[in-house]
Picture 1 (tube, protein in one colour):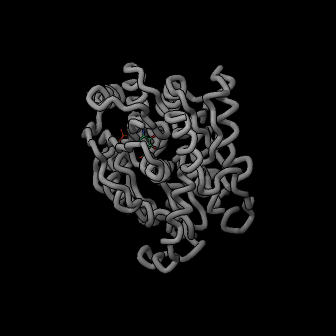
Picture 2: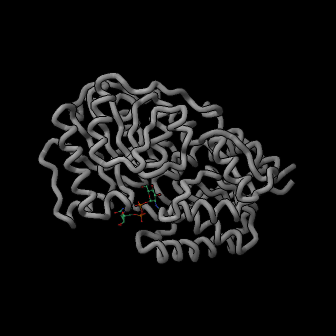
Length: 364
Ligand code: UD1
């Protein structure tokens, strides 16, 4: 039997942990050649390579060096680079992850060449088209043949959009597979490096244009975090976009907020696991905190991951004023937060389920 070639396309930080379990599960099958293509959307050592090292992933087979730019320019460069690769290599399937510009680019390149696409983390919807990620999700799902969904809401969304049942697979969450696999490397002793104590500090990540590109909003957020820092230490591993904006707008913390460089996967997981509270605008962190049972406040008007609010530890700020974060933070530290539970199928086996479907699809 002739081997089938599968190309896994990644580009930005959150893609790497979603890809790992799929890569590892596919590698166990015979008759499959697996290649990793990295667009280079994220290119700094601490946004990219350190994750390959931490996650024990091999170096990408192809690296495209797309780097930053406007959404149009970045996506276009990735489309062009990926088209070259797909024309040269003739993959039988392209697998894309999440909702970043590289996901969209790979879906467009592959579909124009009539190469089937599998989308891992399909169906999530914030119903907010001002978010670039929402546009990326909708287009990717329309173009994909195999849609791997993390939570029930995603199945409903895809059906509402007219996607046939036969393309939809509720498989669980590969990002959580990675979390379960690497949790054993976390250790509360490591908190000493950051001068914080278990359950007594807040961990912050904010990078969405909506929160960081408007100087007045960013200034309010920093002063709220400073305020929270009066009671409990606040650690903020900073995303390059946010760092740039703080410098550009000349916004500074009063010193209560501890801004640190972006962290590798294991150090970040460690800080998440033992924190008292997480404040974020990330997608994946809403899910990770739900699994870790850590209270999470999501500084966004909506979420594409409603299960984390319905049964998990997440509260989405929605239209409430930013200053409510202080009251919510006080609730957390006085022990009044909901407990939450882990969603169905978030059991560490999503990658295996996906590989099984892919193998059957390609080899019968
Ligand atoms: C991207 C994703 C977002 C994801 C986030 C995680 C899209 C539309 N957005 O947003 O969904 O949550 O990644 O990190 O794809 N930069 C660096 N070094 C890097 C990478 C980026 O300095 O290694 C700078 C860029 O120069 C740019 C900014 O960070 O100014 C934003 O990078 P970009 O990849 O465009 O989007 P993110 O905001 O990271």
